[in-house]
Length: 156
Image (cartoon, rainbow, N blue to C red):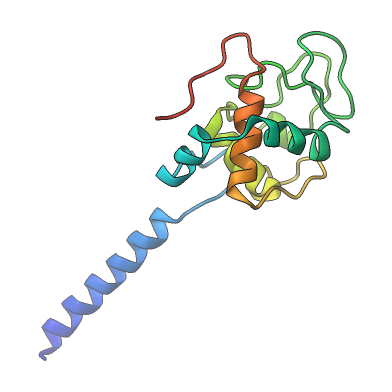
């Protein structure tokens, strides 16, 4: 192997590694547009809404409600969450981190957020670590998606 060939091989390896790192890059929602995997899309299509409601009642309802109108709890109400710019519900005082995150709630951003809330919005006030299991998150997101004046379609 010549020096030139070795350098080309090393350059190709660096490009391959950097491409992999770029594809796996994550960060706060203020700087990252998360994709949905095909596997997660399938889990959404097959979601168990009863299980999603159960997860909501166990993990979310102590702070959030799904009412169309009315006041907020410890957290903002979640009616019309999908399509709402983060940190913008009237009558609720959001953290600066959430107000400044700049993202809009949709299935992709909610999935990313619920996977690891600190990674998604560093400095937020919501004291919730996230839901690691994909199917549990898919069930919850499909359940929450119903509580909207015009529920968006689940991804195909």
